[in-house]
Amino acid sequence: MSLSVDNIRDAAAHIAASIVHTPCEHSRTLSQIAGCELYVKFENHQFTAAFKERGALNRLLALTPEERRRGVIAMSAGNHAQAVAYHAQRLGIHATIVMPRHTPNVKVRNTRAFDAEVHLEGEGVAEAGEYAGRLAKEHGYVFIHPYDDERVIAGQGTIALEMLEAHPTLDTLVIPIGGGGLIAGNAIAARALNPDIRIIGVQTTRFPAVRQALAGKPVQCGPATIAEGIAVKEPGRLTLPIIRELVDDVVLVDEPVIERAVLLFLDIEKTVAEGAGAAGLAAVLADPERFRGQRVGLILCGGNIDLLPLSSVIQRGLVRSGRIVRVRVGIPDVPGALADLTRLLADRGANVIQIAHQRTFTDLSLRATEVEATLETLGGEHTAEILGALREEGYDPVVPVGEAHPHERRAVPR
Image (tube, rainbow, N blue to C red):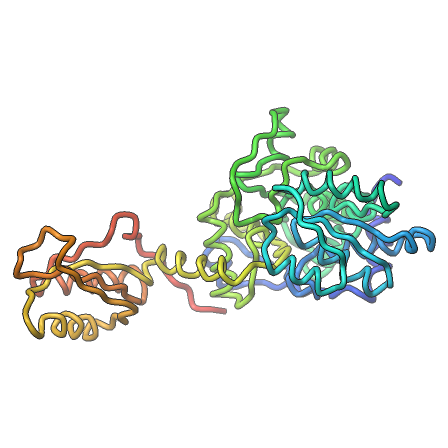
């Protein structure tokens, strides 16, 4: 089977009854921020909150009756695992799933909820895959690869069919890359429908395996990333040649811009994106001139992120945008001085989230005390106004190094 758009159209017909035809919508506010026209394909609206259902189901539907009786096994950082487990349960097929030990809890929990037999093994997808291969040989399971399988690739490519049906004038697709199944399938479909469309792949700076492989360099990956869904050390044997032929470029994005993209999806689109799901938006934010004025399609490929890291992303994002700030000031150690400070902050519209004062760890006068206040403001300009007001009243406010951020305009949600 040599992959073509016909295989992808066949996949679309096979999976149509059991997959959500997710919306692909223009975002006015994100477009204003990015300087281009952004159209977002919300694959986090799938039942398992990720695009992986498309490829997993297309592969499961191709199993023979004998293969169904043997059962299937998959290795995954989470989303492919959930997709295989969910659709295997629907089809009455026993599923065994191998996930890296540090897979987010939400993905492990959801996979187990579909009655799959879950094993946590290895530091990453490669190690999990080796263990899954051994189990497959030992028990006779059919291995469902997350990206290096033609039917999986064809299933993922159905996204581009839907995007270009809804918005045929798109100039560029920006697509996250882990092992390459998502971008390979969608590159085949998009090129068939519009040979002139640009296709840009996105990886994290910590896991640039495909970009390094395309350049003929040895693959060297870094520490953990918020985008664990694309933290793949070994590009696909099938996907890499397709990427080399059809993808215009592969760009890298770092952790802070991915976090910002996650926060923007939440704040503006009111939708949850995991790190990998926000990678496309991150690429546009990191290099706006590259995309300026174009009609750009983004695939928000997944929304499975644990609440604790999501909470951290929100808090860190509020700090970076100047909407939460810590301020240290010295005040006289006399009754009423703290009340005077908080009254001034209230008059200037600052919401005090937390406040503490101490006399010991400071070089202030013995007749003074240090106060540290965590404030919620409207943003960078409001913070600057508050600091100016404090100085006018004789305080000497200090913002800890690394927390003073330039003003970032907060757009009105669409």
